[in-house]
Image 1 (cartoon, rainbow, N blue to C red):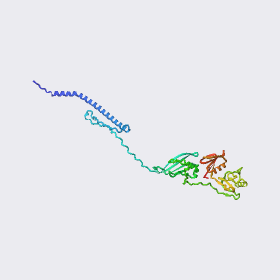
Image 2: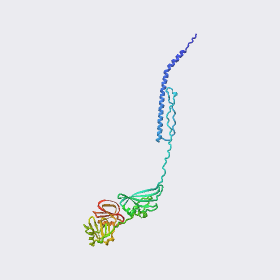
Image 3: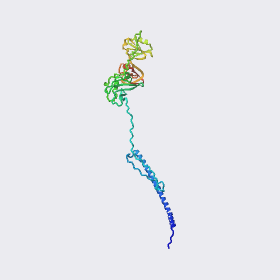
Image 4: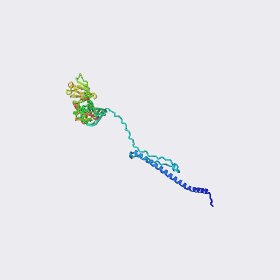
Length: 400
């Protein structure tokens, strides 16, 4: 006899027991999956950070010019998904990973706009040269005039120098050229200007031969022609004073002037008046003129009279027989003063003879008289003066 048993409940119980026994296994699998998901997430984050650092390094290298800017663009890295729920990796949303920007060649810089050309009118160029001349250094400045800065050839030029005279700068025009094909003409400075700086016409022309012209041409003294436009500030003759005739003695009398040289022996006669001085000369056949010093009441009788020089403390009286010989000098005297320049003549002389020597020599522009040695030194150019108690000097105020 077959007995049928209802096993439904038994099957359900067995199935429940099996499922319960599988719980630890499922828990272990879940824990393993969680660890795996965490490791994967960390690895992906590290990879993304490394890629970002590499991208920054590539960009910096390109900016610094370390890598060739023409390298091909790197391929974009694939997007890696990151799990949002560690227990459900299949439903993870994608986490974007920064990708390096593609390397691009730098665009060429735009041309910087330049300033428009400026046309300069009356454009001048100067050439400066230092030369040794007459024992001193001269700076020669040669100017060249161009119509504009693009003109290849100058149209006129000039050469000059500067000297300091008693603290004042004096410009000395030496030569000028009216065209590149023209010879220099000079000197352009007036005679008085040349004399102030210790030059005359001849020495100024000689100095002008050293001028530096931009075309490189040089000229001898004979090549330099007279300047037709030269400043005519005039060679003023020495002052001619008014004379008077003493009705009692018949002497020609000039106040403020001294007759140089020709003193008779045993001069001066002291403590006399001007009238007594003239009377003494009138009674001495050797005497032809006198100089009377009003400050010291001293009388100098002279065997002749020719050269007269300025002296505020003197009165000159000459007999009519020598009146036509009287010549008035432009020498100006200074005591305790020494001049400097180009000395061309030296000799032992008395002071009065030194004055006469310079006055009668047209080349002489001044002299030094050294009292101790009785030495006379003549100069044909004068550059400066200085205090010196042992020296008396004289300078011609204008050309003779």
